[in-house]
Structure formats: structure tokens, C-alpha cells
Amino acid sequence: MDMSGTQRIEASREVVYAALNDVEVLRQCIPGCETVEKTGENELAAKVTLKIGPVKASFTGKVTLSDLDPPNGYTISGEGSGGAAGFAKGGAKVTLEADGDATILSYTVDAQIGGKLAQLGGRLIDATAKKLAGDFFEKFGAVVAPPADDAEPQKKKGLLGKLIG
Image 1 (cartoon, one colour):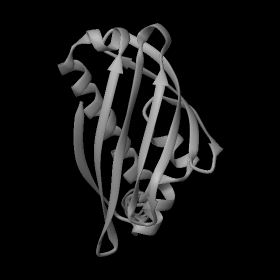
Image 2 (cartoon, rainbow, N blue to C red):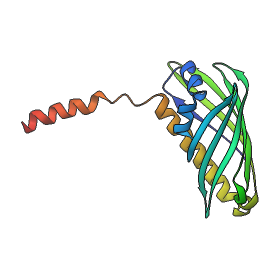
Image 3 (tube, rainbow, N blue to C red):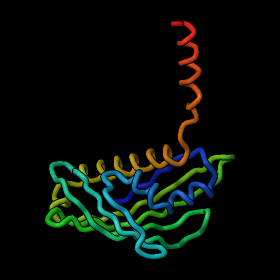
Image 4 (cartoon, helix red, strand yellow):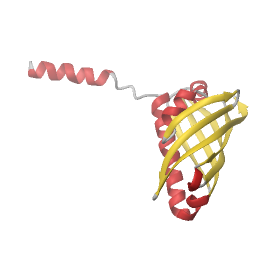
């Protein structure tokens, strides 16, 4: 299965690239992530629990970062085993392009699955994979560049306070 997409993130390429290499940011953004830890200079170990259709499985696996080109992007590849549920392996080419003060993150993913998961059918797997990728990048954008409306509620509260008080 192949898929690609883009996400505009309101942060510089350097900030986005650093976040893509930050274990804590990744842990917050990977759907179903229970743990992720650095095991080598460009290697991570992760445990993720996902529900795909009727199958819920915990995957443990290894992730490797390669083709490092700071702050322009890298290739991330990994493989995980979900026991009786099967396995997943694949990779993504991630590129970062400056767009004023923001960054356009583009990704191309190639993934393979096997075992019980492969028996669920291509449509369900593709839809789930696209949803998981979308969820990751949406959360990643929110973590890296949180909305700047922190001052807004205080203004409303102040105005509401004046109206009520």
C-alpha cells in the first residue's frame, strides 16, 4: 500500500525537523503509542496498540532513520510484530519545504502487512492507514505549532466578567 500527503505546520523547518527527531513529540503523536525510546543514534524501539477493524493488536518494533538531510527531511523505516495478528513493515520519505515562516511537510509512505491483518481486506487496511497517518500529522502539527489563541479566552473572560459583574 502506498500513500502520500502534505501538512502545513506553522513553524520553521528547523523546528519541525527537530520535532521529527524528538522521542517525546513522537510518543505524543503516534496513534496508540505506549512507549518509544531511542536505542541508537538513528534507531528507536516502539510499542503501539491499534484496533484495525475487529482486530486489536499490540505491535513492538524497531524504527530506523536514514538519508538524514537536516532540516530538509529524512527516510523513516520500521517493522513491527503484532504476534498472532500479524506484522507490519514499511517506510516513509519525509521532506520539509520552507513556506515563509511555516513549513510544508510532505510524505510518501510504502507499507506491507501480513498475517490476520492482511485478511481484513485492502479497503479497510488502506482506510485505516490513511486515518492513522492523518491523525499523526494533525497531532504533530498541533504539538509543534500549538494554536496561538491562548490570549483569546482571557479577553472573552474579561469581557464576560465586565458584563456579568
